[in-house]
Image (cartoon, rainbow, N blue to C red; front, side, top):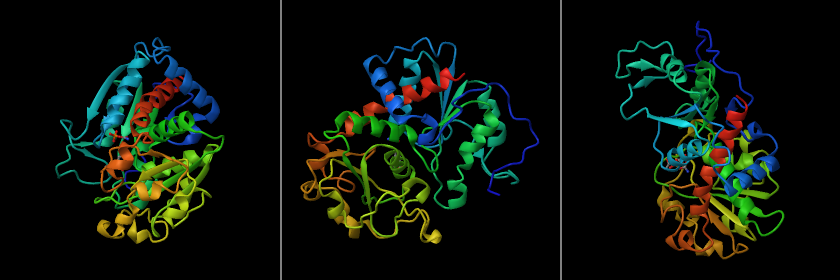
Length: 342
Ligand code: AN0
Ligand code: CP
């Protein structure tokens, strides 16, 4: 049993019943071609469904920092005519205990198991940003916090980057690739790049999951030891030679991630080598030269000089800004689907 997976003697709230109750994985969206068509339609007229969210409230709960997710998801909810409440848990709310069975004599004043149903009582839909702790793999990969929200809020819940996934990002990435592809089946490369701090695997996990579901030629490249969980990476080929992986690529998707702990569980969440020694992995003109004039992508925020050079991110082939703009579109489609199911 995982920390916090509480066998609570409390009935689950029964406020609502929805079709799309949860948005975590690519499967939650159903047919991808239909979802992409819907995204195109929303982009033509993002206020088309402004009546759908009337008198409905979206609560966006942030346990971690955000720029894009915070703004684009609020905007998406407003496109649909919803009211929006944003809660920054670490900026003004009571510090929340997440583990069950502890004596709460520390600095945490409230338990998530009371906080969640209370939050659910003020809204119709809940978005959660709660990053991986990167210390307990089983706890993170069970999506413990997310599932507690699903179980105890009685509301549809969608991920705004949870412990293992960032589906709103991956959907926006797919929309961006669809808009910019120059051939029916483009070659898309997910490349690891260096970073001074340990980062979650949520973005590469979701990107891999969504690319595996899309009609693209998908390749992953990273130093040995950073193998992604097969639940997300599936059978996608891994090429350990970054230059080889980049050959003929149409899209380069850069991201750092810490050790997923697949081959060595004891390394979970660690940076395996000093980032100074990994400088050759920084995406620069040298690697981009062997691609097929590839478009550069990154979810942002990005550290220049670590993940990518100024030259590559500023080039006309860089898609980072339209990619971020598409977050509004992916979030509008997802919230629309949730509202339609109510
Ligand atoms: C986060 C991550 O790597 O998961 C959020 C990316 C959208 N990035 C940082 O914490 C810098
Ligand atoms: N890409 C992304 O999710 O950015 P934020 O962390 O700023 O929301």
